[in-house]
Image (cartoon, rainbow, N blue to C red; front, top):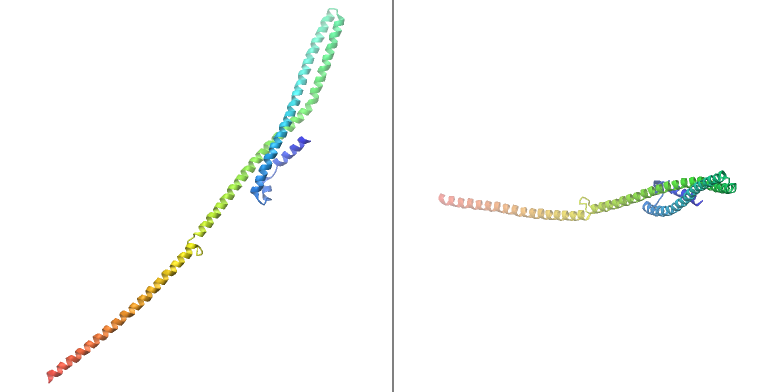
Length: 245
């Protein structure tokens, strides 16, 4: 019953659908860690049980081989006793002949008993050999599943770390995106642009005031020239009157 229970559990674990189990898990990585631990513990327990089963099988096989050897030995003794009886009978010694024939019969009885022991153990040995092979196969399948679990867990951990690194990189790049008006660099650039605009405005204002001053000077120069020419005209007219007089 214990052997069958172990075999059933090994078969069930070996046939487990890892992907289906992970689909139902809230945290696949934790689930895989737990499954790896469970599988490792079950494999260790199963290995111990299978080793015991194999040990029992080897004991049965040793007993079987011993029965076969005993049957052969008793057969040899029966043959030797029978030949000795024949020798005594040929010599006319019926008493010793009967004695050795009786010994031959005892040896044959022992031979038959040993053969029956060996024959009776054969089905049990065959059954145990089949169970051992099935348990070995189940263990190998479990170890294969454990390798899959370990590989899957390592893959998920690597993928999770890569995703986390990519997210951090994305956030870092976003925080320094000069094209993003909400970033610190973007806000600083906007501040500089406003300051540059203010300076341009002040320059334009200063330039406009200076132009007005130059225009005022030009108007003054033109008025001065008019006054000079008027004075010249007056002076010229005075000279002309004096000549005529």
